[in-house]
Structure formats: C-alpha cells, structure tokens
Image (cartoon, rainbow, N blue to C red):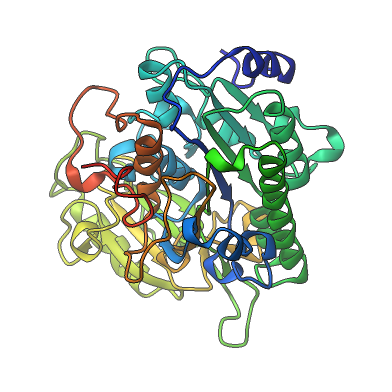
Length: 460
C-alpha cells in the first residue's frame, strides 16, 4: 500500500465523515517541532506559542524541562510519542541499526513494519473507527514510519508527506517540506471538517540546526518560522470557532548540540571505525547515530541473552579502546560484559534492552558526534543530537477545551512517552499494545500528564 494518499481524496474523506463520539470529546492537535531544544523555546523567540500562557492561562501548561527518550534521535522519539512506550518495547532504537544478518549493511529504522507496538493511529482505527485521524509529516521517512502495514499497523485516515509538497515548498537536498508549506497543507486538509486527532511535524529547525549550527542566525529564523506556523494553526482554530473544543500539544523530539570546532575541542567528529582498524580489532559492526554509536558483535544473534566466552574478549577490547578515545563519555553494555557498566544499571530510565541496540553503546560527550568515516555529509554537520545532552525539550499543552487546567506548581516534568497516554485519555481510547499480544511491562509505558487534565478528565 502506498504510504501517501492524495490530498483530493483526503479532503473528501474529511468532509464526509461525521463524528459519532461524545459531544465533550476534544479534538487533539499534536505539533512536533523537530529539533526544538528547550533552550530555543523562549517568549522572545516564540511569541505566538508563549502568548497562550497569557491568553488562556487557566488552561495552558508549559514545561521547559520535558524529556526525550534515548537515544535522542528523530525516529525513536516520534515512535515513542505515538505509542506511549520506550524503545525497548517498540523496537525503534535509533535512526539506524544493523540487522545482525551476515553481510548486511547498516539500515534505516524508518519502516512501519519494524514497530512492535500499536500506534495511536492503529488503536483509533481498530477500536474507534469513527474517529478521523490526520498525519502531516514534513519528513518522508516519518510518513514511512506511520504508513499502513497489513496485519500490523494502520495509517492515519489521511496521510500527507513532504513528497506531496510543491518543488518550491521542499528542500531540494533533504526532501523535507518547509514549515510554511507543511502548515499550508494541514490547514487545507482540515478546512472542510475537523479531524479528531491531528499530528503534524515541522522540520525547519532540525534541518537548519544540522547544517548551520543550532546557535546560528539561520536557526534563530527557523525557530521564528516554526512559531509563526503554530500561530497560523491557532488563528485558524479560533477563526472557525474550533478552539473551544481543541487541545493543542506542542513539543519536540530532541534538542541539539553545537559541533563547530573550538580551541578546546578542535576535532568534534569521532570516527571510531578507524581506531578499530588501526588497532586491528575485528569481529564487530559499527553504526554511528549522532551522539551514540552502536557496536554489534558479529557472532551474537538477535536472540542471545548472554555474551559468549568466545565473544567477550572482543567486546572488552573494543570497550577499552573506546574509553581512550577523545570525545567518548561513556561505554555501556546491553548484556553483561566483564568490566563494562550495563545500560540498565547506569541509566535504568533509558529502557534500551532490545536486540537492535548494540551490544556496546558508546555515548559522545557534549559537542562531539560519531560519524561513519565514509559519510562526508554527517562529518560536515554543525549541529547534531543523539546523546543524553539533548534530552531537554519543551512541552506546552493549551486549548479552549474545558477538560484542561493549568498544571499546579511542582507538577513533574513529562517524558515524551507520556504524550500518547494523554491523547488516549482525551479521546477515550485504550493504550497501545504489543502487536504480538504480549503484555507491556509497566515501566515501559508512559502515563497521562499529571495536573494538566481536570479531575473529571483524568483516568481513575
């Protein structure tokens, strides 16, 4: 099934489907500003977003210390946003991985069939088919992640990708649609009828922070552009009388670290594969993923629950070499390896115990990134993400819906896995489940935002 449906058919669908839900069920809009570091989200940079705190103060909650999941890459965090689970459950452990198949090259983790937990789109379609869902994705890979897969996942009722943008409306190198084009597509698709759940991603901040640096003037303008796009949606909802029954959730998938060389850090790029070659260490596959690098032992199968005695010396050697490499802040093991701290012990909140996670996980210090030595594009980036240094993201909840309230002081900061359970609560949906029917451990599942929903709306 093709991952994108044509806008004409989408408009017809939105125009002919009527709501069969309860009258007090809100319409939910989730806007993900790709790469919007919490430090970028200020009233000076984003006046349209922050005016919500003064215009609707009793129903607006702002968290500038929400947390992305690890690794802080686009794919795992978008999947966590729309499944309410950590990578250990949904299986998207980065933007790339090695399948552990002999002779296979590293591959992208951007296919819907790789997600092992239902998305909100799947839950809505299979349990409340009267609900209308809309996904507008500025990156084609995100449209692939949330496309339909027979017997596994359902796509949004209407799925728009940057592939459908005009040539002038998307970046010719990345293929990402510009924020003004993405928002124009969203407003056109929802003009005739209002979806129950809308998910839209804006990518100009991410694209610009990568290429120009997160503290560049160009990135500053990109943040302003994302804010303007958010303002257009708010104005649209108010003009059509929809704001009174809307819930707007604005957040990001990760922050950013600057990679421009400095006197203290003249070489911010870590090409660990070259170090292994020089040390004559073999028997592993490396997958560089920004602020982390996955190290897979060739002889360890996907089903392995322990490191064999014949493999452990190799991983011990790799770990020792990584510790002596400039820019590497941590060396962690997924399964027990002598002398190496386990991920679950050092960072139990990461929840990365999945076969697609490397047998070793190398973590870059702030200002460094891991790069494939044969990838000149990533080596030239002036900003990147993936490490725990980029976990802080903003999260704003607002709207005219009566079931919202201003979060009281002391309300815990949300994690991005809390977004899907909050949306499910608002729409009266059950939480996503594993595709194979097995239960999800409680620690792998998020919870509705504490303090943001009224007592009548909160789950009991």
